[in-house]
Image (cartoon, rainbow, N blue to C red; front, side):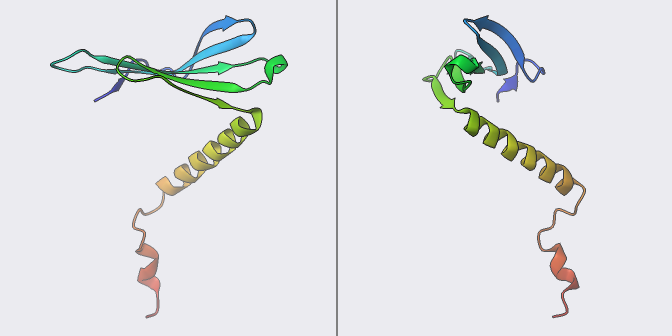
Length: 108
């Protein structure tokens, strides 16, 4: 099972030509009978002169790297959706988790 390598949520580790690179996560997956795997997720924030976008990189020692670009608009939408998700999750934690619990008061 993969375990986080570090509890820090985001670490800025490089800046080159105005692009800032941040380590978002690092996972270490120890395999008992073979080589262990390391997976890192890195965000590259480009400066406004280059569109101000974000490129997310997923690098793994045992997989093909994956990469995709997010425009400023897509990143704003992602942040808005994730914030709404976190608020809804926090509100839901205090409630009963039984999805049919509201039917108990039904008159039929």
